[in-house]
Length: 403
Ligand code: HAM
Image 1 (cartoon, protein in one colour):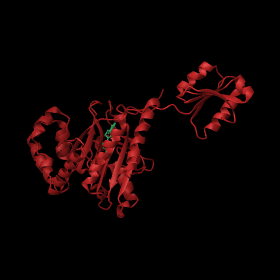
Image 2 (cartoon, rainbow, N blue to C red):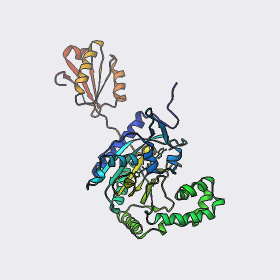
Image 3 (cartoon, rainbow, N blue to C red):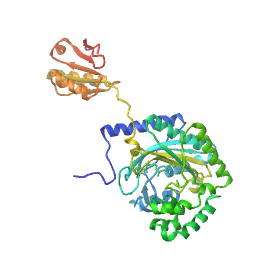
Image 4 (cartoon, rainbow, N blue to C red):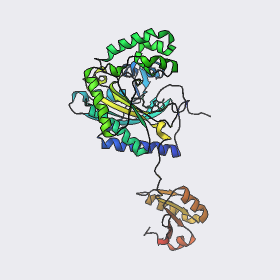
């Protein structure tokens, strides 16, 4: 028997309904905020992710589904959605137009991580990317949008925010941090030691408790921001206060992708275990330029669909449509024909075997149908159908053409 690959899942029945409910709810909100749908390929040149997510990030250095295709190209299954959308934005020359662009997307992402609860190798994201808007109002708007999506899905959350500075304040901060880390090097874990040389900022979110204690006195970026980053961050926190959105400033929130500058945020839930991040995002003002486009400020987020699946409160599905069946074999064909006519605009489930009344009524229940429609011996002889409204319990027999 062939099973799905480790860390990959099939979705069906109640789960697939939940999945679609999440996508549809998020999509509805995104459209209200002026976002239009974008679909980009799952397979991209590996260089795209190396240059955007970053060579030294865990995602690129350890977790990529990377291979050489039959044409000898170095390709990779996308580990996240932003890089592809930025690539598409530049490919379509939208960076050379003055118009602001807003895109939403959803689909599978691939990371070769160690699977555990809430961590898959194939998972799905719903994401939004906004191009051309440098205002901190846009950062606020995106945070409000994620909050709105979670509100409509009935999900509670905590919001963590931080600023990751810009090319003016990040490099001098990095220097100070490296100096601090070098002094405590011997006591830090192996991963942290490696990162001092490759990506020192990531040391800040090391999960090792001993490292975290050692880092409590480390220089904080938030205290070393340049004037512009500092004023934007203060404005954002003031706006969040005004909007009544609770948040925590987490100076260790650095995100696992290298393209961020200024605002970074994460939505977390304390109801789903260790993998608690249910959405993440932030500003990436330098990425379009970095991928050879014209300088374009941008900000976005992505929600992890699988992580919120168990948190979503599903609305009760109303009984709808018809269940149709025959109680004598001679009426089966008529029922099948009628059902297919009705399907022009109604949901219909049809039983091809002639059965007794009780058995059909079980079928009505299983199909969650609003109406039961049966043809028995009498109905067949008289050219009628028997119909019962399962909600009002009203029953009647009506001529076929009226039905
Ligand atoms: P990310 O934080 O890497 O950001 O992923 C976003 C969300 O995807 C996470 O908060 C989590 O819910 C979910 N996720 C990540 N990895 C896994 C996994 N292995 N299994 C299940 N769920 C997972 C990004 O990907 C950025 N592209 C977000 C963004 C958009 N930033 C700006 N625009």
